[in-house]
Image (cartoon, rainbow, N blue to C red; front, side):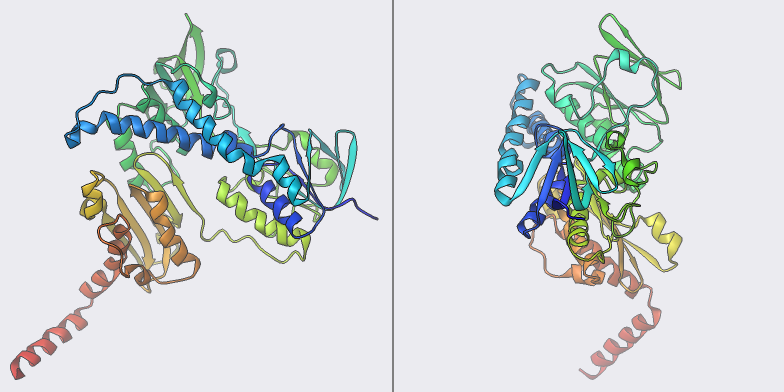
Length: 475
């Protein structure tokens, strides 16, 4: 049966754009379908780009507030949230042309805006058209989860989908969910003048992170005035005299102007009629194998819609796996061994590979190499000597994972990511580093393995003592 396209990509976010642009540049006939009247997906419009732009504005406010520490006495007269958010939207507009329909059409991609669905295993219907392709890629992303809180819908709430459209700064803001997004935006709004309460269902904020590292971030959030409720869930919301009253399952009452939800993401699969295409969907999203094929081998899926690591850089990586398998031979497998991620609070928190707990459960020769930023001169010079780098290795020097919490952690982690991806030993990280730089935290941590293994080798120490004693005796 003849087909219209080599590849039909459904979803114009990070994964879909990579597949569509690269596929067209490889001279495949590609159609890209997006239900919203713009390309770019969550990352550009509702996630990475706007949140980091707002975080930067908040960091500027914090710098001004703390300037007196450096003998610079000034006053922060006023914070205008609408103007801070104008910066956010200017950044989006600057990046948008890279993700414009015109750019993709110039590459040879047919861009179709519309909300469609599968009608059978080989056909996707959109705008009254039936598109047939050799292979399909589903990259429809995810949307914010709505927790079962009584009265929440009636009271109204914010998510990352609409928080960047606020025009008036909430005097008091409750953030429900203490994961990375909740902590990032909670700190940003606190710095921009809101009184923030963070409601965490766990005893630890950011529960997927190293407990020691998460504790460093928590201490900073609390020092800045954020109230954190641990081990509590919002149970009921009411609006009284224009303000929102939240009751938790522990009987706590919080009165705020706005509620920001940060309770996870749900894959966008409802409208696709995947059953008709023979595609199975699980609790986390579309089920895929190591080659990112769904239960229909001619339909692939990538990005948030398959669950797993819901990061833009992972979606981009998965797109490269899908591209090779869908256009050529399906032989490439996704490898998640070395996946880094970062939380852009201040201090930043970044990690890659195994946690200390995971490593100890698998191996019995674990070394945890730790270096505090308090002993890194550049960090002290910038009044940023808080946090640490922790590298987890085996006795052989094999790097199993790393955690950095401190200034520029999201940048510093990449040296370790490169070493792990190339299967390099930890001593490769001890090479010359510019002084004074923050990157010394990595080399200093890596050097700990040599110091510790030497300190634990009694025979080597005994030999060296005798060797130098002998040299002195014959000098």
